[in-house]
Length: 119
Image (cartoon, rainbow, N blue to C red; front, side):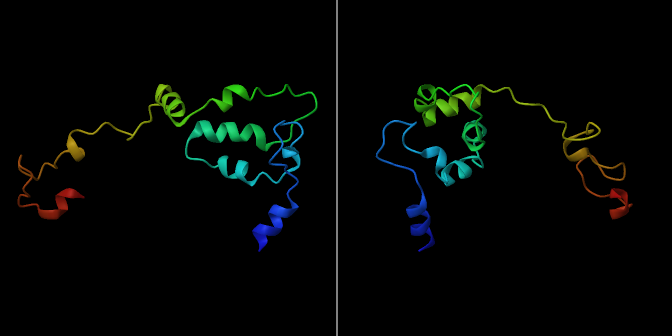
């Protein structure tokens, strides 16, 4: 019932082909709000363009390049991005899982020191 009321109150004219005449700017545009939280960073940033109010002096956004985006092209954009290198540890490990303490044999079996060697 709430959804039906919200849809009835929404001024967006779905049948209008002209973006300037469809009154989308006055619409609730809840879809855009959800897209701002999208898992794909490109989609989220594009949705952010439409989420904030635009001043009268703002350059118009070219819709044609955005309309041609596909899942494939978005995937290709994401794979071309340079990944940031993030340190995973403060000190470089001495071996796999940090190596074995001195109280252990080369095969990892505990020696006489027992569990206290791991502390």
